[in-house]
Amino acid sequence: MNLSEFDLIDSYFKRSTTVQNSGVALGIGDDCALLDIPEGYQLAVSTDSLVCGVHFFEDVDPYRLGYKALAVNLSDLAAMGALPKWVSLAITLPNGAMVNNNPNWLSEFTRGFFALADKFDVVLVGGDTTKGPLSITVSVKGIVPRGLALQRNKANLGDLICVSNFIGDGALGLSIKLNELAVTNPQYFVDALELTEPRVDLGILLRGLASSCIDISDGLTQDLIHILKASHCAANIAIESLPLSKTMRKEVNLGKLNNDEAVQYALTGGDDYELLFTISENNLRLLEQRIAQQTQPIPSLSVIGRTTLQQSELIAFFKEKQAVTYSTGGWDHFK
Ligand code: ADP
Ligand code: MG
Image 1: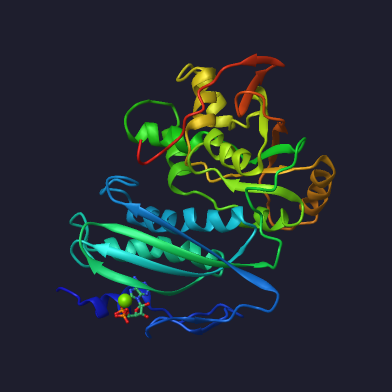
Image 2: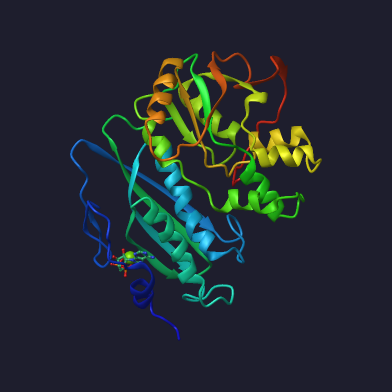
């Protein structure tokens, strides 16, 4: 049976919200949603598109696609220190609820999407449903106390450069999916690619302490360069400080890739969705105190370098204090 546009909206996207203090005065069903922003807060808005054949394969697990479509957007809010509140979803479907001959495709997609939305108390408040080549555009809205959003252009000279958790695993997962590489524990890396954890709690803890912040989507060096250009400074990065996961190190020890390749994944791979931020030494101590008071788990942090005055290159790499050269490329859709 072919469902109409309105049947699809009613069956898959409209839900009664159970979120307390959601701020949703009017949700799905009218021409616009009406949202209440609390006094003293600013609205943080971000949009990301996922296009079939560019960002995902048609045979991707629809649960994981729904999850990731929201995760990459929540990661942008995390990078600004915003609390996620609302989301809208524009979806283009080739054949109603059925994709890739899977009649459960849309219900699996929304199950993944809502699993993450519910985890962060984010309410789907609207969107658009059209027919055509499969693509997904998610727009998230969050709130941040006026003046406390973390921007890219406020890094100070001599700040520490920090990154959360591990980097390089997601990019390795993509190489595995593209059959470019075989490792002993492929599922760990594919999970890192597809089940990204947006660092919302950490972003909120960084408010008022980090001088700048970005989420790593296109690769550490490329995303760091965005901060450096916006803040008019350069960076020294210590290669041995890059946080490679235990699983990544194990694959290196087993000879599945060499150490330089692992470092290259971490520097330029992308798809990490970890937070990269600059912070003064004093504020890092205050951040560690804040983190120690949390009951929910906060990912580990690694200091990987320092901001400096620009000499020639924007980023200078060091290995055991010796200058070394690494490629600083990253993902660019138009290159
Ligand atoms: P209009 O024609 O006024 O733009 P639509 O017919 O496109 O409205 O959508 C009807 C209602 O359903 C709107 O409130 C819209 O926000 C919502 N909606 C449509 N598609 C989606 C979707 N994929 N997810 C969530 N809400 C949706
Ligand atoms: Mg519309």
